[in-house]
Amino acid sequence: MGRGLKRIGEMGFSAGGGAINWFPGHMAAATRHIRNRLKLADLVVEVRDSRIPLSSANGDLQPQLSGKRRVIALNKKDLANANIMHKWVSYFETCKQDCIPINAHSKSSVKKLLDLVELKLKEVIAKEPTLLVMVVGVPNVGKSALINSIHQIASARFPVQEKKKRATVGPLPGVTQDIAGFKIAHRPSIYVLDTPGVLVPSIPDVETGLKLALSGSVKDSVVGEERIAQYLLAVLNVRGTPLNWKHWNKRKMDGIQYETEDKHEYGLDDLRAKTRKPPDVSDVLYVEDLVTRVQIALHKSLTEFKGNMEDENDLENLIEQQFEMLQRALKIPHERSEARIMVAKKFLMLFRTGKLGRFILDDVPETNSVS
Ligand SMILES: Nc1nc2c(ncn2[C@@H]2O[C@H](COP(=O)(O)OP(=O)(O)OP(=O)(O)O)[C@@H](O)[C@H]2O)c(=O)[nH]1
Ligand SMILES: [Mg+2]
Image (cartoon, rainbow, N blue to C red; front, side, top):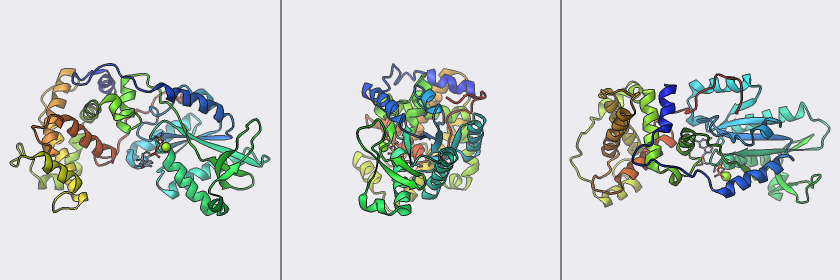
């Protein structure tokens, strides 16, 4: 599996291959700014995406981050495969790195993170009156969602902050401006800075970039939805995931016959109306129906696949065929010139909202080094 997946990243996918300019320069400048602010922090919460615990790290800052008191918050755990998550927790434990899987939208989950932060700080620093915690992470990992939850927890613990809206910390030694933060603990007072630092992800190879794009850390327009969807299909195929779907979802799949041809030809207005307000059924049922249709299509294509998954051409042909099947499954009309991009967008939406299941895209390393 590992070998196959490595190759996927190298595949150009003739439709959308070519060099990619992953990040604009100003983001790198912002990372340099964070480097300075980091010096002020007594502890850093590095937020990563549970689905890509290594690919969502910033390589350049790792030496500085690992030199600090750090807790890695593996966010969006609700989207990650729980059976593999514990291997990642063990991996970070082996590296002597504190880590905790969280869901930034869940207050109880964020409270556990804050408990760990408090523990890490209070066991080492008892004399300082004020301690600062900084939240950093690459784009879209859920830093703002986390800060919002922290704000709510902090306001409940220390209601005075509600009136002031922001608790001002400082002035700190060597810093002219005050820094706003939320008080989460007392004696010593612990504040979490209310503006998170955005880091540039490190992209040593195309596959890392594709994983980041699939998880939403790289804008879709940088890689193109089609290419991201092709990558997702390649991952699913190489892992044989659709073969399990029959097993998990048998009852539903047996209930819906896969249609090779849609009898009704959908027009543009049809589709627009459906996407906004599906007829007769609730939105939930509509999406469930789409998911089942997608699962049936991919399951069918994989069981009927006669080629060799290790062969790049065979895999590309399979993916091409799956795009057409997905188009029917997702009820996207044939004549539309941008049909492929619509297929890709809808398919990615299903993946990103967890409708296709929970995934971890990175492989747990065998070595003992945190990167
Ligand atoms: N399923 C799930 N979604 C989450 C979680 N945390 C955040 N999100 C979603 O992920 C998306 C990005 O969250 P943000 O909090 O804006 O991420 P960010 O790191 O602040 O992003 P930037 O400000 O662009 O760097 C939003 O759609 C959130 O609702 C989580 O734990 N689970
Ligand atoms: Mg944000």
